[in-house]
Image (cartoon, rainbow, N blue to C red; front, side, top):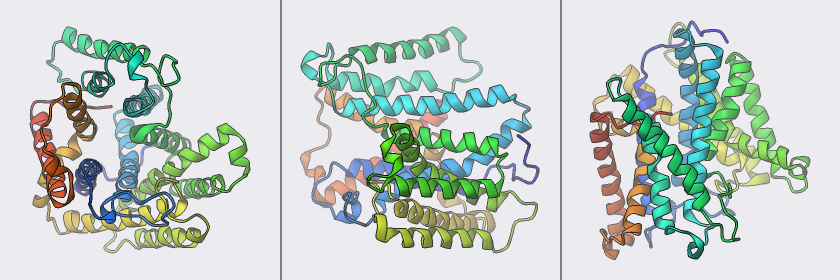
Length: 396
């Protein structure tokens, strides 16, 4: 793969800001999920609703941001003269890590027989959520090597043991990917997209073609009795191409913005694609509807359009107008996205395992619940600021 000579090679704060905002909203809506009597527009829409809320946009936004970062990640490694083997090893390890963490999280939620497990499901889940920290922590160069290896390989050993301690509700030992979990879906979508990106040398026209393929596969896969549904491996690929379409859309927008010698005052190609995403979603809606749960092409394309518009606004505000101070609030999350994603789960299962009640039921309903969810999200950002200060950062 060739180095992209025209690709912007400095930190782009607007991408970080979009990532930080997305993660903040993600923590908010995840906490809000257990709150009763809140408006429907603050919840995921039902599968057959033919509609979406801002909550249904959070996952696509994260996929979109993953895609926006792909050209910079590859270019940075090529500029460092990393070998092909090094790049591919890193890529597969990152995807595999996301998939593994996702599967453990899913199995922590349901599908176990608590009466047959040696440890309680809550304590099992607490360990499963906690082990990514010692395994994937970004240790400083002066951190003792023996202690690093102890934590790293000790964490891996614990995950292996947890696999064999898990008893399914069918009585079988070991976990199954009931579904891949949010992180697992991100891992698969990332893997499909970057493999293709590498083989086509990150060419813009080739990524546009791949997006068309993703949307077409997604659409055909939703047609009852289609050939993709008749073969499990085709159904598997098409299912993950659904989410790969959002990663690919992010790659395309990133290239249109930053793979050029001179930035455009008005980026008409980006505006064109925002409209194209919307129009595609509009014309496919009568056939498949809008549904995050079903993963319809209208949901992915409307999400891509909204993410493009949001990023364009942030780009204008932060890169052109230089209004960046306000984003400091969100940046701790942008710098440590994986840790802030798993930390609420650690807190939840810790409380469950040791039967600790911190939040009164009053804060699990209506307006107090909404206020608590906002407060909790803010607390998580402050915790991330402390973690970042003391070099507790997960790096896949």
